[in-house]
Length: 192
Image 1 (tube, one colour):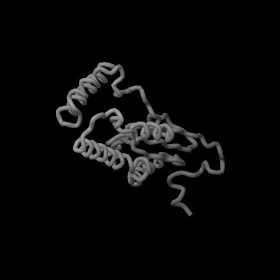
Image 2 (cartoon, one colour; image 1 turned 90 degrees about the vertical axis):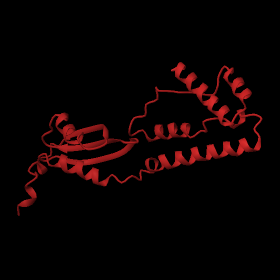
Image 3 (cartoon, one colour; image 1 turned 60 degrees about the vertical axis):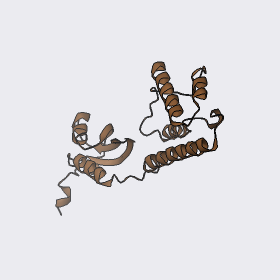
Image 4 (cartoon, one colour; image 1 turned 30 degrees about the vertical axis):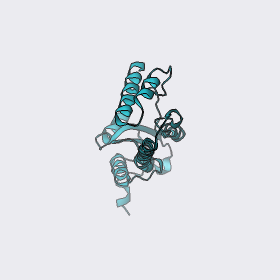
C-alpha cells in the first residue's frame, strides 16, 4: 500500500506543477517531506447497517484532498483555480452522496419484488426489509422473515440474488410457533 500511496502522491504533485497549480520548486520540496499528506487505506470496512460508521467515513472523505495551508506562495490566479478545483470537488461529493445519506433513493419497486418473491413461499411473511446503496451500482439488502416452516437460507437467497444490483444480502428467519396463525397460508385469503 505504501508503494501505491507514493506513486499517487508523485503523480498528483507532478500534475499540479504541470497545470500551474503549484510551483515546480514547491512540488519538489513537497516530495522531500517525510509525510506528504497523502494516505490510502484499503482496510476500512463499513457494515451495511452501520450508519454512524458510514457517516464517519464520509466525513473523513469530505476533507479537502489537499491542505490549503501547505500550498504556499500561491499567486491570485492559482488561488482562483485552486478554489474552483475544491468547489467542483465538494459539489461532486455532495451530489454523489446526497441520495444515499438522506435515504432518498426510490427502491420501492425492488422492495416489492423481494417481498413478493419471499411471501410466495408458503406462510413466509416479510416483517422487515431495508435496501440501501453501498456503491455506484451496488445495493445492500437486509430482510427479516417469520414463518412456521423455515427453509434453508439458500432457498431465500436464491430468490433475491438474481435481482439487479443486490450485492450484499443479510437474511434473518424467525420460526413462529403460535398455533393461532399456523393455518394462515397463501390460499387462506380466498376462502370465506
